Image (cartoon, rainbow, N blue to C red; front, side):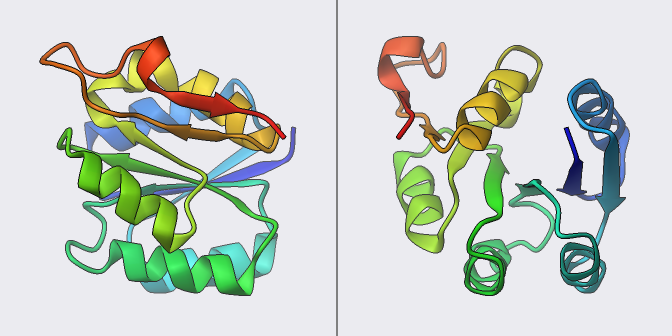
Length: 142
């Protein structure tokens, strides 16, 4: 598969996510600020943008909307720390195709990527302390 852009603050988590995505994409470009992200998405026309809400606290959903308007065919998956159903709803309203808990990255990231690249959505809903379950998540293609 082509290219993915990963917008996350630098740190150990970014390398782990980049490594997982590298199993599915020819190239994974890591960016750590909004200007680099916008320039990279414009220049590379990636298949997927994985964006951590912690990249721009309080402004990442606005950035998601901006990217969606400029690149309507780009698939966007947001990463969040808190299990708050309002975040998933706000992410969807901002134009994201999916929203995934960081705690579930190891077990769910590649599946969520597969779903959103196939044209589906991957949003969780909270049903207890164990996080999202298959039956709680929308995984609809089409």
